[in-house]
Image 1 (spheres, rainbow, N blue to C red):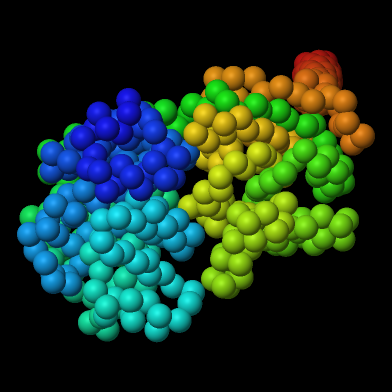
Image 2: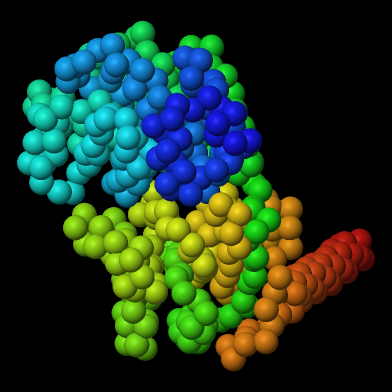
Length: 430
């Protein structure tokens, strides 16, 4: 469906055409009319489905029409809550792009940096505020922000906010908002906590659900390399010698390992930077900026830090460590293969991760292609599993044999005891 068919106004149409958007994605096609009608919405969609535009475009349109009748109103009218700094910045950039010709003002606030510049932008007057919960509460307490005039509330990646322990802060913020508002909640998954949150803050919401979290995008080619843990870094360096891999996001399970991977790549002459929670905000933004501008080929990230990273034409995602939660795998590889483009998702699997691979394949209902020919190949996963099963069988056999031996010894002892008792009784009778 073309955006014109969704009755998008000309100033926004012009802006999204500048961004190269012509047709709406399924989540946009379903969500935009609902939001334009003023209804509450619960949206479920994974990364890479165009979720941000699904709420940003109709919100800009509604605010644009209100602005025409409410001139010189400097109150904050819309609030978007995001779990991470990176995502907040990404959303703010989207609002700026789509609202380029509307005159709607927006800004993002987040922790980890000085609040001075953020406060100055707030004082100048804005319509849309994108915020992380912690910094928002700080500035509300300092009376730099008034939430009494909020007409639109968006909770983006609500499941991640709860995962990060931000549920209490979110509830505190919602308690400060007017009850008469339009609320939109977006999440990739539907745990019980999200259901409770929906019941408490949304009024007769319309549910929109596309691309279930267990579904991977067809344009992403997936493969797995079976490799010993100690050889993963060598395999990564080997793969990155291929210059056709223009930009790659490498996922590490831990911050420490992200630093180690980055260090190893730099020593091998490969330009790379790491992004994770222990890095300063300026450092994280510099790394992300360098990656987007192609100054570095490789960005190494942990899952939480990667939330909100949206890089055009990202050719590859590499799972250096397999995630412990299968749905996280879907989120990770969804960074590539966007907007119909082809993408490549490569995973490394060591002996300890074979069960994680099984769970991922079960979740996505797809077998991932095993790449057997490479310099650091380990035993085929089936062989690994088989050898493990053989080992288990051997242990079971040993246990059974030991049990048999114990039973034999017990029987021998019992026979000996019964013989002794018999002879003792015989002697007594004699």
